[in-house]
Image 1 (cartoon, helix red, strand yellow):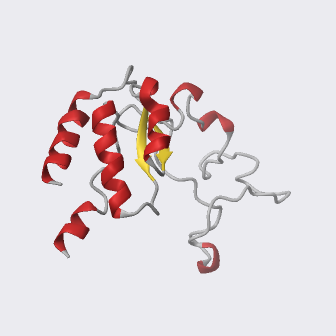
Image 2 (cartoon, helix red, strand yellow; image 1 turned 180 degrees about the vertical axis):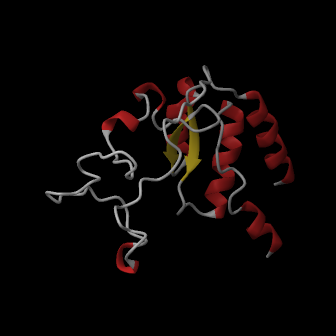
Length: 147
Protein backbone atom coordinates (compact mmCIF):
# COMPACT_ATOMS: atom_id res chain seq x y z
CA UNK A 1 0.00 0.00 0.00
CA UNK A 2 2.84 2.39 0.76
CA UNK A 3 4.25 1.99 -2.74
CA UNK A 4 0.78 2.53 -4.22
CA UNK A 5 0.35 5.92 -2.56
CA UNK A 6 3.91 6.92 -3.46
CA UNK A 7 3.44 6.07 -7.13
CA UNK A 8 0.07 7.84 -7.14
CA UNK A 9 1.55 11.00 -5.65
CA UNK A 10 4.45 10.90 -8.13
CA UNK A 11 2.05 10.58 -11.08
CA UNK A 12 -0.24 13.32 -9.69
CA UNK A 13 2.65 15.77 -9.84
CA UNK A 14 3.22 14.95 -13.51
CA UNK A 15 -0.40 15.32 -14.67
CA UNK A 16 -1.11 18.94 -15.45
CA UNK A 17 -4.22 20.39 -17.06
CA UNK A 18 -4.09 21.19 -20.75
CA UNK A 19 -4.82 24.86 -20.11
CA UNK A 20 -5.01 26.51 -16.68
CA UNK A 21 -6.93 29.76 -16.63
CA UNK A 22 -7.09 32.41 -13.97
CA UNK A 23 -10.66 32.15 -12.77
CA UNK A 24 -12.08 35.65 -12.34
CA UNK A 25 -14.71 35.98 -9.64
CA UNK A 26 -16.98 38.97 -10.12
CA UNK A 27 -18.09 38.82 -6.49
CA UNK A 28 -16.69 36.82 -3.57
CA UNK A 29 -19.28 37.80 -0.95
CA UNK A 30 -22.51 35.84 -0.67
CA UNK A 31 -25.75 37.61 -1.50
CA UNK A 32 -27.61 38.14 1.75
CA UNK A 33 -31.37 38.28 2.03
CA UNK A 34 -32.89 41.74 2.54
CA UNK A 35 -33.47 42.53 6.26
CA UNK A 36 -31.79 39.28 7.32
CA UNK A 37 -29.78 41.33 9.84
CA UNK A 38 -32.99 42.52 11.53
CA UNK A 39 -34.92 39.26 11.96
CA UNK A 40 -33.55 36.12 13.56
CA UNK A 41 -36.03 33.91 11.71
CA UNK A 42 -34.42 34.76 8.36
CA UNK A 43 -30.86 35.39 9.58
CA UNK A 44 -29.44 32.14 8.18
CA UNK A 45 -31.70 31.82 5.15
CA UNK A 46 -30.38 31.92 1.62
CA UNK A 47 -30.97 34.58 -1.02
CA UNK A 48 -34.59 35.41 -1.83
CA UNK A 49 -35.56 38.05 -4.35
CA UNK A 50 -37.44 40.98 -2.78
CA UNK A 51 -40.93 41.26 -4.27
CA UNK A 52 -42.50 44.14 -2.34
CA UNK A 53 -44.04 47.01 -4.32
CA UNK A 54 -42.09 49.64 -2.34
CA UNK A 55 -38.90 47.61 -1.76
CA UNK A 56 -35.75 49.76 -1.90
CA UNK A 57 -33.63 46.73 -2.76
CA UNK A 58 -35.86 45.60 -5.63
CA UNK A 59 -35.87 49.14 -7.06
CA UNK A 60 -32.05 49.21 -6.74
CA UNK A 61 -31.68 52.34 -4.66
CA UNK A 62 -28.17 53.55 -3.94
CA UNK A 63 -26.65 52.18 -0.72
CA UNK A 64 -28.93 49.14 -0.50
CA UNK A 65 -27.78 45.51 -0.64
CA UNK A 66 -26.93 44.14 -4.06
CA UNK A 67 -29.37 41.81 -5.77
CA UNK A 68 -28.20 38.60 -7.37
CA UNK A 69 -28.49 38.66 -11.17
CA UNK A 70 -27.08 36.97 -14.24
CA UNK A 71 -24.27 39.50 -14.62
CA UNK A 72 -22.46 37.96 -11.64
CA UNK A 73 -22.33 34.55 -13.33
CA UNK A 74 -19.09 32.76 -14.12
CA UNK A 75 -17.78 32.61 -17.67
CA UNK A 76 -19.24 29.48 -19.29
CA UNK A 77 -15.79 28.31 -20.34
CA UNK A 78 -14.53 28.25 -16.72
CA UNK A 79 -17.70 27.08 -14.96
CA UNK A 80 -17.19 23.99 -12.73
CA UNK A 81 -13.40 24.18 -13.19
CA UNK A 82 -11.48 23.24 -10.03
CA UNK A 83 -8.70 25.55 -8.79
CA UNK A 84 -6.14 23.06 -10.14
CA UNK A 85 -7.51 23.52 -13.68
CA UNK A 86 -9.33 20.19 -14.06
CA UNK A 87 -13.02 19.35 -14.34
CA UNK A 88 -14.45 16.76 -11.93
CA UNK A 89 -15.54 13.30 -13.07
CA UNK A 90 -17.08 11.02 -10.45
CA UNK A 91 -15.80 7.44 -10.52
CA UNK A 92 -17.25 4.43 -8.70
CA UNK A 93 -15.16 1.60 -10.16
CA UNK A 94 -12.09 0.87 -12.27
CA UNK A 95 -14.14 0.44 -15.46
CA UNK A 96 -15.45 4.02 -15.23
CA UNK A 97 -11.85 5.22 -14.90
CA UNK A 98 -11.05 3.88 -18.39
CA UNK A 99 -13.34 6.57 -19.87
CA UNK A 100 -10.80 9.23 -18.85
CA UNK A 101 -7.94 7.57 -20.71
CA UNK A 102 -8.00 10.08 -23.59
CA UNK A 103 -9.19 13.01 -21.45
CA UNK A 104 -6.68 12.88 -18.58
CA UNK A 105 -5.53 16.47 -19.22
CA UNK A 106 -9.05 17.92 -18.98
CA UNK A 107 -10.83 15.80 -16.34
CA UNK A 108 -9.70 14.62 -12.91
CA UNK A 109 -11.29 11.56 -11.33
CA UNK A 110 -13.08 11.92 -8.02
CA UNK A 111 -13.87 8.69 -6.21
CA UNK A 112 -17.49 8.58 -5.03
CA UNK A 113 -18.07 8.74 -1.27
CA UNK A 114 -19.66 5.29 -1.03
CA UNK A 115 -16.74 3.33 -2.55
CA UNK A 116 -15.06 0.88 -0.17
CA UNK A 117 -11.43 0.94 0.95
CA UNK A 118 -10.51 -2.07 -1.20
CA UNK A 119 -12.01 -0.65 -4.41
CA UNK A 120 -10.47 2.77 -3.69
CA UNK A 121 -7.04 1.21 -3.58
CA UNK A 122 -7.63 -0.46 -6.97
CA UNK A 123 -8.91 2.78 -8.51
CA UNK A 124 -5.91 4.79 -7.26
CA UNK A 125 -3.46 2.17 -8.60
CA UNK A 126 -5.14 2.04 -12.01
CA UNK A 127 -5.29 5.85 -12.18
CA UNK A 128 -1.55 5.97 -11.55
CA UNK A 129 -0.99 3.57 -14.45
CA UNK A 130 -3.25 5.58 -16.78
CA UNK A 131 -1.72 8.90 -15.67
CA UNK A 132 -5.08 10.24 -14.40
CA UNK A 133 -5.28 12.69 -11.52
CA UNK A 134 -7.46 11.59 -8.60
CA UNK A 135 -8.61 14.54 -6.49
CA UNK A 136 -9.39 12.52 -3.35
CA UNK A 137 -6.78 9.75 -3.68
CA UNK A 138 -5.85 9.80 0.01
CA UNK A 139 -9.43 9.74 1.33
CA UNK A 140 -10.33 6.78 3.59
CA UNK A 141 -6.92 5.16 3.04
CA UNK A 142 -5.21 6.54 6.14
CA UNK A 143 -8.09 5.75 8.51
CA UNK A 144 -8.14 2.10 7.43
CA UNK A 145 -4.40 1.66 7.97
CA UNK A 146 -4.52 3.01 11.53
CA UNK A 147 -7.25 0.62 12.70
